[in-house]
Length: 444
Ligand code: LLP
Image (tube, rainbow, N blue to C red):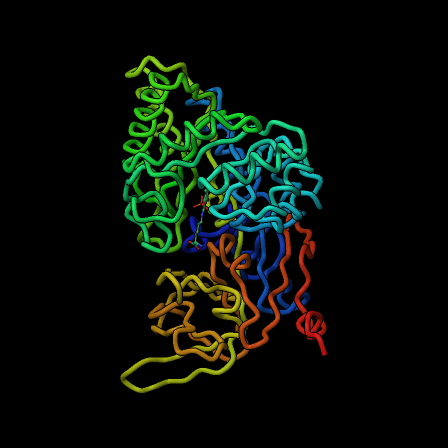
């Protein structure tokens, strides 16, 4: 008998690497039937594929080590912070970035090694900084003059000298959504090189007894589908580093050009390969150092989205379907802007797949709406789907980054369950919130 050829999953490049159409003709991830998972854990549910997370960690470390041996990858935990994930990240040998005391608490809960943590953020508080120092954090990336004084004082009280990076702003537009653009002049983040603030920060930090400035950091924005902005920014910041070396004998031991590497949300817009980001960034660092006779610093990149984005798939159940003849068909699902604010906030686009007939051809154009009380609560506008009915399950791939972390309790909705799948096994890593959770902080 000829071997049964397996049905191909359309849009496979947007889904986790283990995603497939299984023998029942249904969507499976990590060897688990997605409809079965929805039955067991309820919907909305976010399914994360461990194999994809590990694969992306290895892609990054492999690509950057190949192009620039003295390099490290630090996962930006704002993309999705969870203790079980942090353990996987640590096992894969990555460092981790945090931006609040809360993300630091997640790292601590996972027993993440303090030396491999970097604390970012444009307005870290005294308490958060104290907690980070008490944990023995490896790096703090200073973002403002206020923070130079504050951190120097706290480190002084604790009688230590903290390794710090300075976040500079290179005035470069990476052509992403304005709300996720950070490295331009008009930004709340970092010390502007253009205005002279960065030079003043180098001077002040170097003169701070309890700070040990080891390098420079910048982050342009997110997601970056173009490579050129990295090249331009690396050149500009290394130029600045060389000037600081001439004037103040500043030594650039570490260099961090941030994260921002993109993922595919829709088939029509796919990102460069990780290897291309690595090649471009490494070449720019080497060229900049050559041009100025600078010793090559150690390099750290800090992707968030590209590590977990493709690994996560959101699954919803269809409720009401409203057909407005000649206008639009609204297909309402049981989640929406409460668990994924990205379409409403940035106009982000998503691809929609029918869970029990993932390979079926799209026959009707519909708009997938959420259940929240806002007209803007739309997850995907004008997408083609197969015949669809109430009770059907829909999957949105590329939902692993910045959906769950930006989730809210708007309309007093419970935030969804999160399941980690691997080799046919599913593990709940965050349970769905209950009404008791929602009321836990109310003071009667
Ligand atoms: N490093 C710094 C300093 C950052 O601010 C960020 C992201 C990253 C690294 C990681 O960027 P990634 O590799 O994940 O692109 N909520 C938005 C994204 C905000 C990104 C904030 N900073 C979204 O949903 O698209």
